[in-house]
Amino acid sequence: GHPAEVMRGLAKGEEAAAIDVGASAGLAFELEGKSGKLDAYRAATAALVLVAPPRSWWLERHPDAAETIDALIARAISGDDDASELGEIDLTSGKLAAVYLWLKKVGAARELAATLPSNGAVEFGDGYGDGNGGLIVDLGPGCYRLTRHELATPWDDETIIAVAFTAG
View 1 (cartoon, helix red, strand yellow):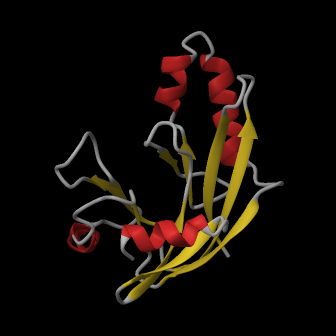
View 2 (tube, rainbow, N blue to C red):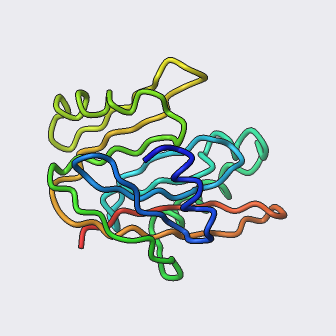
């Protein structure tokens, strides 16, 4: 879906908005608006967990709190007891593309996905701005449940947000 269409969907107050991505379907959701970056983890409890802000962002702001940050991230990755449901996504190809809303070359994901080895992952960008705006991960074919889990931190008004993709 077009970024403006996605933003309108999310502006309605829903935690996720269904989007049309051609032959497939997808879900749009927000992680957080502080860093513009995330970390991706494979976990025993889920096929993939996206965590924002990433560990490096936390360490820049709280350099003496590495153990606390690592413990918070470990909790975010392993738990979803109070998580809210975002929806389900059926991955017939087994490949999940997670992209930044304003990524200009989303079409590159299709070509990259075709070359991805089993259980592989690859980052990609569009040449604009810093870093990569997309990630393709081979999770294996199946239906995946998406949940969003927020954890409070010891620092005022700061939370860690995790979105888990769990086979189901």
